[in-house]
Amino acid sequence: MDQMEPHVIFDLDDTLVHCNVHFLRARQAFVERMLLLFADTGISGEEIWRRQGEIDLYQVQREGLGKDRFPRSLVAAYRELCSRFDRPADPEEEKRLLLLGYQVYQSPVELYPGAREVLEELRDRGCQLYLYTGGDEEIQVQKLVQAGIDRYFAPDRRFVTPFKDRIRLRQLLELHRIPESESWMVGNSLRNDILPALQLGLQAIHVPEAQTWEFDHAVIPEDYRSRWRSVSDLREVPRVIVSRGEEGERVRRNRTAIGPPEDSTPGL
Ligand SMILES: [Mg+2]
Image (cartoon, rainbow, N blue to C red; front, side, top):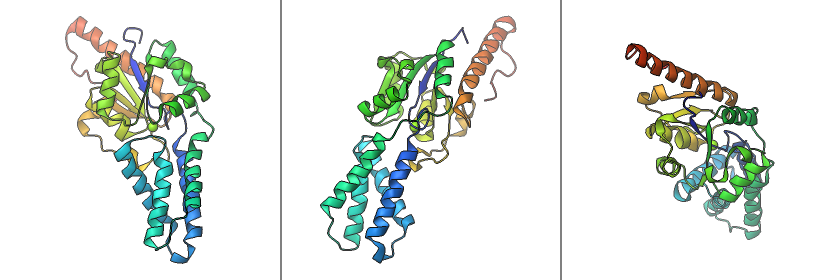
């Protein structure tokens, strides 16, 4: 790996620190509250859950991953229920729902097992580390500090954006003059992390989360197969990057010594 010093771009939420679990808990509390308020209507918890999720996803697409979106989507889902069952929306109830929504950002920050060690190992091996995360800048940086992993990402290498897509990722690459072919994206979202990275020519490591948010799904075209892989544990990430680097070096040496090898595509 000494020869290439890859650039490794990390997602934060549900890759290095737990995030979705806090939203799931708040959504569950919302459903229970609505079931109480609308008990006489016969509406099911599944329907409330689904509808709140749809409203939230719609808002993500419109306004991105800002901190106000989720609390507001709880209120919007409540208002929709009120309207459907012909009841006035209670401003006090709406205040309580906003509070419930904002509580997710006050939840204690919890690192995934091995997250710190993974960053430490990659840094010690000479990798250039970057953070690429969706959401509110203040909240995301605060999480980084609370998790005790801010030291691995220099302030000018933290990229917080309301949307995560190919355009934003390209901005990050251009800002730091990062060569695509020597770069990795590591993240839990096929849609936000893996697909845009592959489209731009990077290599990618998908670290799926147990309870995936609907928004994170995407179909990855077969053409990209050789440049990405999925691991079940974040702790596998350094091995994947190291073995790919060694493989690349072997290929380069072979080319120099005997011309192009018969099959130079590593089986990722
Ligand atoms: Mg994520």
